[in-house]
Length: 280
Ligand SMILES: Nc1ncnc2c1ncn2[C@@H]1O[C@H](COP(=O)(O)OP(=O)(O)O)[C@@H](O)[C@H]1O
Ligand SMILES: [Mg+2]
Figure 1 (cartoon, rainbow, N blue to C red):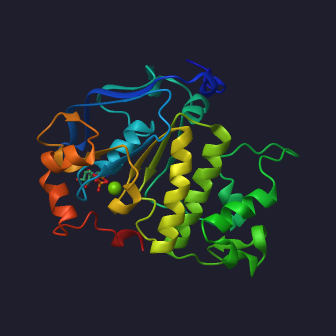
Figure 2 (cartoon, rainbow, N blue to C red):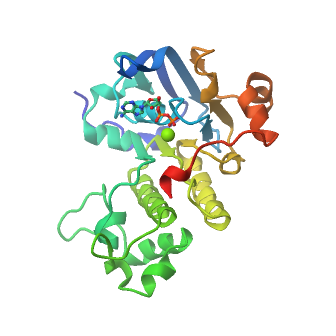
């Protein structure tokens, strides 16, 4: 078992790769999502923008793919390698220093605001991971501070028994948490599942900017239901191709236009990227 050999590694980071090799994954015998599928993504050390996107119709395996890459769903067959390290063979701490993720399903919120955005960060007695002023700065950035400033600030109680947040507000809060974790752990890989699906245009813009900021430091894979979130993406994997191609390839927009009917429909306005009512 490897024990966090990566913490200071990012300083020396040169090339970087993620690989899924010959993976099978099914939830049950009726739901086979991956069947001898491969994914290879190589990043050059001097590549500044490392934003990559995943699009595709609902139910085609985007969330499953993110979960497999995040170390949450071990494929029944195949390997998942990050820089040649099998992420299912390292301990949780090592994995956390490699990968930060924000999942589609908002975690249930409870207790003080501060507790919720610092979730997943180390909390030793007396040790301050982030100054309050920085937390406020991030909450301003995601457009939530006004809401809490009028209440009890970082001590505002949220969730059951406290301030009830809308789907979009929860999504922005979750994103703020991911952002803080990513800035703290400096992972090599950041996985985000539909960060903007319930957001208005202004919030979407702010979150997209912050995602780009993260993508300067780490390979950032974002499942998006709006192409706008992926305007700056270097490559896009389209999960509508999953049954016709065993290799999951991150295409440029030009290539994708040639390869995917779904993508062509999307840019022509003949398809919606995702059914996104489930989050609101
Ligand atoms: N926990 C689960 N149990 C059983 N089937 C699931 C589960 N999660 C997802 N699925 C099924 O796996 C397939 C892929 O789902 P998912 O990865 O969530 O797709 P997407 O994120 O592209 O909408 C779908 O057919 C979905 O119904
Ligand atoms: Mg999904």
